[in-house]
Amino acid sequence: MPAPEEFQRARRPEHKQQRRDAILDAARTLARDRRVQHISLGDVAAAAGMAKSNVLRYFETREEIYLQLTLEAFEEWTDLLAARLLADPPGGPLQLADAIAGTLSERPVLCDLFAQMSATLEHNVSPAAVLDFKTAITARTLQAAEVISAAFPAVTVEQAMDLAGATYVVVAGLWPASNPPPEVARLLEEAGLHHARMDFDTILRRLLRAIIVGLPAAGPL
Image (tube, helix red, strand yellow):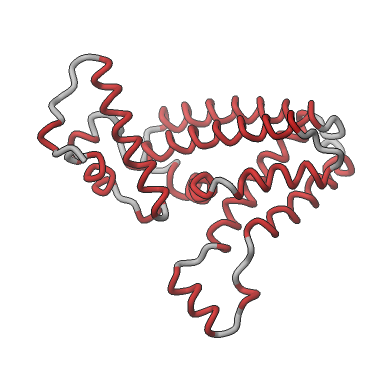
């Protein structure tokens, strides 16, 4: 890890981009090792080998850093989902639900970011930064909806957009519920309350199956 003094003020555009990339790399690595909610701006700065004041030259807050990583992780996931659906088109709603749930289960950092997105990450940032994020993630969601509808025509693009929104809401609530802190998980195990700890992948598949099966029956609003 570079020492803080190695990071002189970047003056050229490429140097500024290098600093931004170093900050994002540090924040990304930290998110793989611990919950996003427990990562502070100071943690990111230390991991990047920078002072907090230097980090704030490139990102206005910790939340802005993780909003950027949310968009990045979401784009990677939608690319993966599109590739899976292209290689193995779903023969029915259950297969579509399993493809979506399976690719999300493979991406715990994205699920953790979803759990934090509306609750914390869209706060403590400027309205302009939130607008940029919302604009970018909505555009990418529409692309994913078009891919889903093309792979499974029983679901329209509009319904696929609803599916995407429902998927986010389910993941945002289910992820923390199925991943309690280690000390809570241990107490639940000792108390025999196995049912109190949800299995993320299993429940996500069941809920997405129910949503996709019900979409055509729901009709337009």
